[in-house]
Length: 59
Image 1 (cartoon, rainbow, N blue to C red):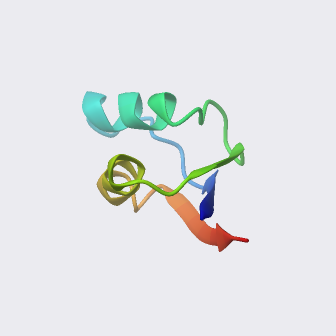
Image 2 (cartoon, rainbow, N blue to C red; image 1 turned 30 degrees about the vertical axis):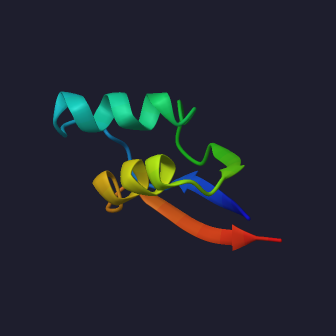
């Protein structure tokens, strides 16, 4: 199953590791969207920056 992740809040002003997590997911600019496979690693990254992103499952 895949998840759609959208960056809805800027990581500027947050901790360095949170900015790097957004970058590692492929989220560079506001409202960037990536569709990735749902794995424990991806879900952990999403949990770390959950206050910056919107997530929904995609069939």
